[in-house]
Image (cartoon, rainbow, N blue to C red; front, side):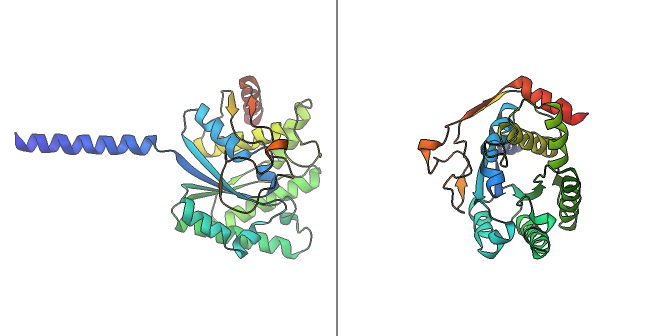
Length: 261
């Protein structure tokens, strides 16, 4: 009888441990630039994941105009990995670095930074993915996707493509706000596209539910500094930052369906 009681207690403890692990939010760290924080992709993805039944906690290390090589050089990415201990690291480079802009050194610096950060993420126990940037010019977009994919393969991490999908979907859904008012940074539709592509890559399914993002929707001039911060942390400039945004379920399903075609 005593052995059966001990066995029951061990099984109960294991069951509780599994339940606790399942209930613990998956920590995701986004490292990027204004392409990442304009529209607050980290908070948008976390809200989308929650609506689809996945518990996600998101943080970001971002700075306007910054490259991934800067986050390696100043040590901030390594500190963020050590301090936040994410289970997933999402990297996003500046839009032109893979196309050797502003100079030829940008390409190699970017590839090297991706390799370094991928290895650092793996060493910290995190999965690592490279989220693509985008170009509107067809030839530049094709080249960008090829080079981003090659950089991800060289670093042995998955690549989440954006640019060609953006060109295709924006041609089909021309009334959506793909770009910010400045015509360059992500608008709500592009932020949603990024989040859907990440969801498809990480969870293997397209999201179907609408959701609310209860977090600052940052603009290009956000005042964000390259410091680890929760995705829903108060905005540095609250007077000019919307406190949230709603994404309609029909739009989520529509973009997901177009991406599957």
